[in-house]
Image (cartoon, rainbow, N blue to C red):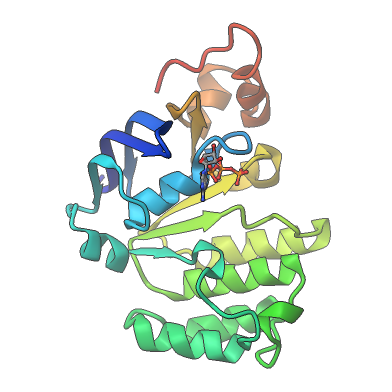
Length: 238
Ligand SMILES: Nc1ncnc2c1ncn2[C@@H]1O[C@H](COP(=O)(O)OP(=O)(O)OP(=O)(O)O)[C@@H](O)[C@H]1O
């Protein structure tokens, strides 16, 4: 199986404070991976480091390339639509994506927009938190790349919409692509996951397969994840 993402000796400081140290991770192609960790653990930072939106020390490769331009090309990440003026309309954001990303498929976007009931004439400022998350999911998955990063796609999404969003993630993530999806609450995404990665104690503390957790450890992902935060929890192996 080929490698979608590899991270070696990743270190990142902000204002002299260590955010991530000695991060190591290898993800295979074709996996849906949960990126878990408490508030402020460094999940968003890790995504920004992968795409080169933040600069750390160490080696990050998407596919076989560590070059930042290639990493950006091969990775679809919408970073909370940072950079767009709030009065921008959805159809203007879609036009921008079409212009900037040659791999953006308008057909795929329109299918998802219909499924997620996005109204192209709405301004970003008028969107509820959940609708904005849906837009980010549709924009991110409409690109055809090797690696997709979804940063807390369920924040603000109600339980009815959650099913719709999970269906769209399963339907529109290509089989040969890898999806890294962050969340604090693993139960929201447990049914989707092939693997989990946990950011804890300023590092990538855990990387395990969902089957390994269920079959070998005999626990559900949710219980395993909670056990990492108990005194003496085993967050030491990858
Ligand atoms: N713009 C910033 N300026 C200073 N510190 C920052 C900034 N952004 C993030 N940090 C710090 O970096 C650390 C990691 O933050 P990050 O947003 O990556 O965590 P997270 O796991 O994504 O959290 P959450 O689940 O709350 O979104 C935190 O300690 C945070 O305070």
